[in-house]
Length: 365
Ligand SMILES: [Ca+2]
Image (cartoon, rainbow, N blue to C red):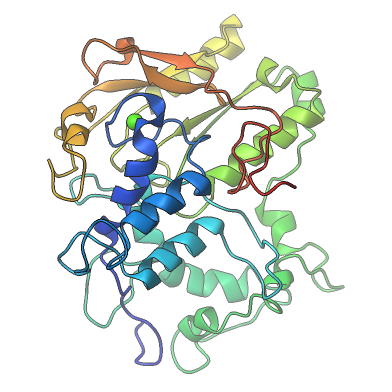
């Protein structure tokens, strides 16, 4: 891989991106700990003023971008575009927004396939772009997610990397849904499970536990939450009878990150107890394998983060849309000191980036 024609390095220092997001939303759950549990309330309306305060020259964090504590206007603009999700030239959404979450940066001490690894670079190797969405996606996008498939050589001016960087969001993106006589199923038909009608599954006595990162770098947590809500609506508002969603802030793709990401055993026990004993899970205890806080104690970050981060501890994962909230006393790395609470999320909310998720859309539509 690697071509002088295409971007090979992401032109920013991504560890400077979480501080403004955390400054806007970390405390909304009642505890400054580097984890945004109340992702429902962490909307653009709250984050944009924080981004403004971190903008070089015009904000309150100085004017020195690289090595300083501010973000350049293009960096701020890039962040807004990333979290808003991809759109075509008419501004129509092609996939989903993302929840604002500190997991956009995976600290070196909290390894995992996070947003950074998927979308930017795994390690700063000069001349090599190692983002998974490029190395894996460059083959998958033309040859799996286009109908008809575009057979591309690995390298060269018409190679896979070239295809990705020349991808046209107006004319190529719709081909994910295209069907032809030779390809009667679209890519989305055979790659995605988007049906919200789980009546046969429920009727058969099926039980379903879904766990997802709030800020998965490849699949948007907002899209998954939105699917769950549509499924709940389709199932008459009774989804919790047989299906429960557990969102994990900060977690990378399927694990890792500055997160309480270690819960597979407890999740397996939860689904087993539900199926075999009829005990539905109200919370799943998750452990944190980060032995120390991966956040620096100061500098760009609120010093309370390093103190309150649940190093080597446990936290509850809660049944969506409930969130984990600190009870106000005791160790912050003990799940016993946290409760799953109703965060005020309203069924009218739809996680659509501009929504306050209190049932009143911030843009009035
Ligand atoms: Ca918090």
